[in-house]
Image (cartoon, rainbow, N blue to C red; front, side, top):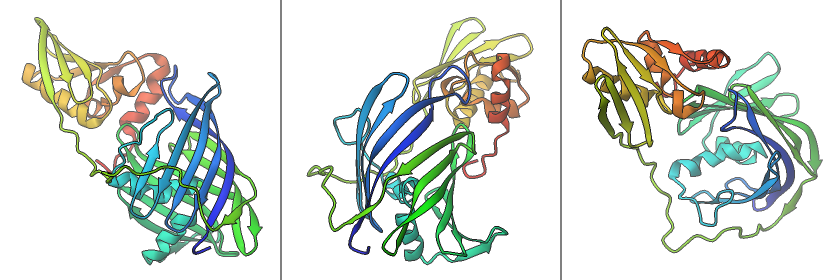
Length: 331
């Protein structure tokens, strides 16, 4: 296998948290495609169909030890891939096969850190900001599952698990024919079904790098805040870097903030702007018209300062989850 590709065709279900009516409601997609995997290369060509709309999108991925070419679903041009994205594909590819991840652990001499009661040897390392744990069965040395613990601006510390089931053999090579996926701390589940594998000496060229190709450095977004007084006691706080506006309503003894987009960092920016508008007045109430990230993604720091959150009854449990979720990886 050192100089050959493991080739796997697959079908999968994907459930994505998108712009849906209720918290944790997912959009269902059906995917199918082929992956070519070696120790340091991962290629994927696939289609994704939105089940409810019956619209199909195409995507191609070509990752090596030094590059990442990616054409996103529905796009004609290559995505502007960053160095971090290229590194993350070491564990993102584990959705289909842990082969590249196993090679990474071996190349970096990661040693076992624990043996669990279930007879699994545990190995752990960190890639970028994601804590990657590999669990190998002691009885047959096969990968049982992989966990990824990474930071999410909205949801805090989020665990994704890939469970490898129903192993088959191709000569001396063992591979899972079914992968169960648990995302968002187990709130979203998916499954990948893999057809009988083959081994090939070469892989097709799915994408071609332009002459000026280079991986981009991960850019840090610079916050830009502008305050507009719409009427006496009514102020808009515009976050130009997210293309959002929040409303600050000034009462005699307190403030009400309506909506805070995307992240705790943006919530802090809104609090700072509100305190400059009305020094000494606490934010007593926070209101959001909807459960989506652009409306209440920044609710956490407002709650930590003692504000009461006003939302519909169906959103209460979701807001409590956002307000109390741990953010240890990216405080």
